[in-house]
Amino acid sequence: MAPQSRYAVTLPGPVGGHGAAKVVVVQLVHDDVLHPAGPVWGDIDGLWRMRIDGEAATVLRAPSEYEGRQLCLHAVPLP
Image (cartoon, rainbow, N blue to C red; front, side, top):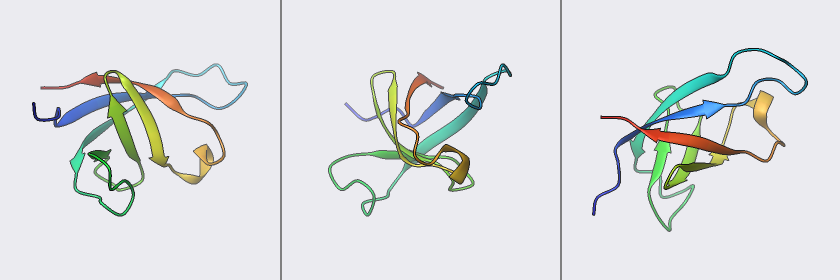
């Protein structure tokens, strides 16, 4: 079965903050350099790269404000 082409991924807010969650839409990209073992999804700006398994997104590359944080995020398939 082919992988889902688009997902909405919920991002955490700042540590200790109480703001609304942000959502980034990612699409299937061909990025063998980051993860040669399987599909990779990324946002349109190229800031995020992640692997998605079921409803869990594991971050491979993130913007600097998320660097150093262990991120396993919720992913929802989009049509």
